[in-house]
Length: 141
Image (cartoon, rainbow, N blue to C red; front, top):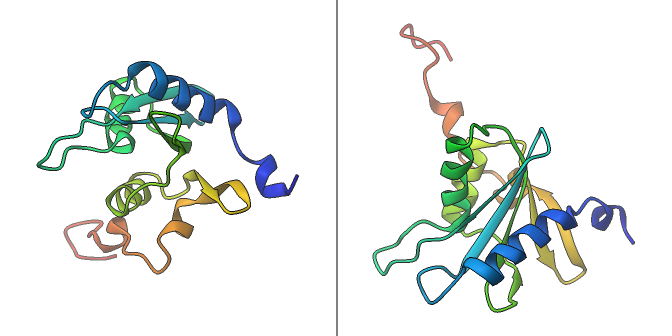
């Protein structure tokens, strides 16, 4: 095994896969996400598909985590229903995850197997919302 594979949180993948297998029913809920908080807790969620857009499982998870008092996520993974396995986040989710959790690890599948990548690696040369906010009324930043 490579060092990158050793860093994959298989318990987290299993948690997302379990939710995908048991809670994703029909076309409205087809993806599950699981994230590990710095304190070890695991939070899970499913997407809410709608033809107008609807939030991905990763975005629902951010709200679910906040509702449970979890604000410091360490690693996240998304898994598709019907045994589709690990699915990388879409572009919108990548940007939101970066803005909320700039040190987040994201489990993705590659030709070489599963890897945990920093969210910054999924959006090289990215726009970081926090970098463009004014810190105070004087405009110093």
